[in-house]
Amino acid sequence: MKTGNAITLPLVVAGILAVPGMPAAGTPRWDLTGVPRVGDTTHELGRLAFRSLEVSGVVLSRTRVEHFWAIQDDRSNVLIAFNAAGDLVQAVAVTGLDSDDLEDIAADNQGWLYLADTGTNLRPRDEVRVHRVREPGPGVTAVAVERTWRLRWPEAGRDCESLVVHGGHGWLVSKVRDAGQRTTLARFSLSASDPVLTLEVLGDLDISSPAAAADLTPDGGILAISTRAGLYSWGVDGDPASAVRRAPRFSPSTPDTKKEGLAFVPQGLLVVTETRDRYLDIATHSLPPAPGPRLDPMAVGSSGAVRLDWTAPYGVSSVLEHRASLAQGTWVPLGPPVPGLGPPLPWPRDLPPAGFLRLTTDPP
Image (cartoon, rainbow, N blue to C red; front, side):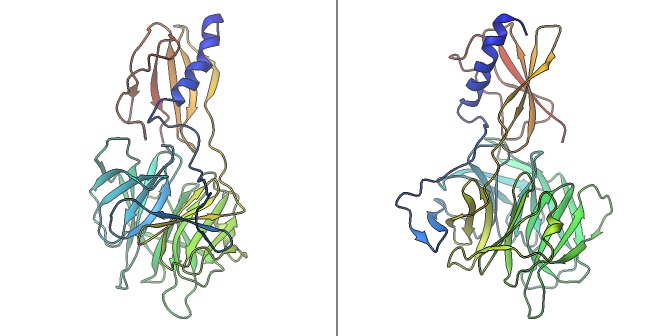
């Protein structure tokens, strides 16, 4: 890059990440000064500051800073976004969702959310479903189901309230309901095209308490499961199947037995109960830091445009194209909607007069 632009481009990147509402590296850390302590490793964060039905699943946003997505139990068709303070940020209707018993929500690093319609509510159920939607951007009020997987357990009627997604698979953890049952880990391929898939059961997990939620760090390094007894976790190094028949780490967590929401954060695990209470379990594991923005020096075009590789929190890759011909402009999403970014935003005038940026996303 030639002289002038070489100086201003890093400043532009820093300025972009400071724009209110824009995604940036980082997730919420809580100041625990004066926060009630529950047990050896758990702190009470207070209730979610909005009324809802029974919260049955929580996941950290992969595209927006300090945001979480939650679902409600049973036949609800609404996604709820809340922030680190527990305030309601957004409610999004999910169109095309015909569910029986929503129990968990998962995210991948391509901007998709997965809704686990896998519970039984103590009723016979031969087929369960997992639905996929785009993670909504700010201001979005409705999002459509993009794909549904119809799934069957080899053993009919298994209850399940835990889902994670990684490595081209959805991973389900069964819930112990009857004496003699074992907690099992199963998976299905996200690329499979069969109308109905039989889940591949990989084996038993060393858990005797009913599993109510699961989460996986965005890099696939750590698997955690919330149960009535407490929190179990394994280092899995990108392969959740490696947790089978291995001794987990255990934390007794909260005295509340209905811990339905579980999400990794830098200090450990955020736990949300059916009644909207929030707890922070300080785990020995920590969430890996989100990638920061980076300049791609190979992308200088003949027109003088410069492309900047940029990564939203925890993996949603994007490209910023810098053009030095204009003094001001707007954010213009090109191609498919940009997860977490939403509509074009005003160009901040206090940034260096380096033109404007256009944003495109890599295909999922």
